[in-house]
Amino acid sequence: MNWPISARRLASASLFSTLLFAATGCEDASDLGVDLPGPGTSSTEYEDFPVTASTVLQDSVETLKTNSYLIGRVRDNALGTTTANGYFNLKLSTLPGDTLPSLVAGTAPNPQLDSVVLVMPFESVYGSATTPLRVNVYPLVNSLDDQGIYNSNSSAAVDAANALGTGLSGRLNGSRKFNQRKDPSSTTDTSTFKVTVPDKTIRLKVNSAGSSTAVTVFSRLLDKSFNQASLDAVWKGLAVQPVSGFTSAVVGFPTNGSSTSTVSRVVFYYHYANKKANGTLKGSYSIPFGNRSAGFGSTLSAPRYFTEIKTDLLAPFNRLQGAGGAALAIPSGETGDAVYTQLGNGIGTKLEIPGLESLKAQAQVHGGNVPSIAINRAELLIPAQPYTNLLFASPNSIYLYEVNQFNQPLKRILLNSRVERLVLSDAVSQLTPPISSIGNSFAGDPPVPTGYYQQAAQAPLFSVSDVNRYYGMVLTGYVQSYVYNKLSGVAPAAFILSPQLRQSGALGLERAVLDGKNIKLRVYYSKLQ
Image 1 (cartoon, rainbow, N blue to C red):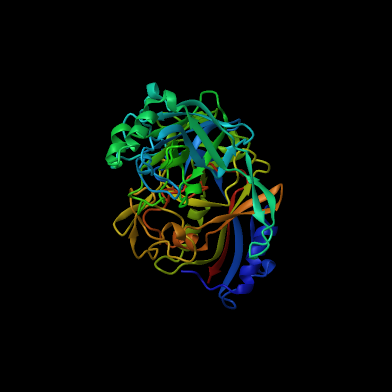
Image 2 (image 1 turned 90 degrees about the horizontal axis):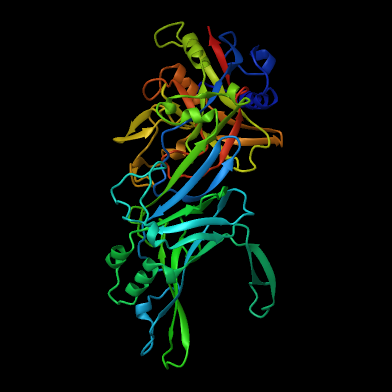
């Protein structure tokens, strides 16, 4: 429950959280302008509890059927080098404008293959966009298992002997021009002007003449009985990996596209004779990959895909890799007071807050069910290091997970489903969040309760200036639940900050670099008498 608190005192608390961000210690409520619940019944004060911050590495990240897939490699002088490889099944789905070569009109069309192109719309670049992305494209030895579990630590065997293309290059800073009508609403004015916009699509032309896979697939496309089984028999899947030595960027490709222009696909371009056999016409046929919306009916029926993410960490973070590394933490004092959180490579910021136990002890002085203090407001204040978002964009919000002493997220049971314990927003109960139904996660395994992730407490990023940026999370309901023993299970040993919601289908490399020396939990509370 939330203890009564007036609108005036809430406003005062929020104002002082910003103005007194660097303050520490304890003050009387009269100095803060905080209204009390009744005359002579309590005294109200606030206290800044110190937080011990460190950097940890979690075991794995869910990357199966996430909202994007990642490809590339980027070198970071702070943490190390991160490599992302994409693996895909292929599944037939009719896209607008496409025609099977076997269905073209004419008495003797005789379709001939011109080229095979991977068309991949992208939305984010982690690193530099000035250098083209350079990749190798291979067929898979075996299709991804429909029942298999894949995450950032998984891989798949590739058929390197039948490469679809090696050293292929795609621009990340290209542009395109088109004519736009000056007055789209007019039926008479057709005048136009030229518009230049970024071209956020990578096109990788496969050497179809030298690829037995591409030629064989096209030969099957000439058969009118061509179907999914025909495709699976000759093409097990697709792998796209950065070439050795490429370290400029990792590219994020969205997977929710519903139109042709927003779907990753393999396009077979061909030509054929017209009806009179005295000229040629052009056609194309696309096979989508890495998408969960392009006419597959549901996320579960869409072809499987996942991203393998490997990070070669620099010292001292390399102590987190290897046997037992997941239970370790690198204190902020060893890294210039900077701590890191970045979902895609499993890096997280661990927070230890001994002040919570101190408050809990104070609350139990009277014993029984009668608390001795009332938590009026609590907020976590997390300053960000300035000028640390050149390679990786800062996340707009960060989230908080409860973990055990081994840095493993604690679990809660919701509707017979085990989910990681998030710190939830003040709008819902920390003990029993109101979840009414069960739904499939984006990855399809495991299922998660509908709406659970939408109830997570968020710490938005506030930018006072270029050098004064911080994340702030209201934790009133959570601190009340902690102090009054109303948590969903055992109390956590610590917390881990994440820039995205784990197991919710989100994937990216957005990163927050935080000032580990000045993170604090500010609590306003009343001593009941």
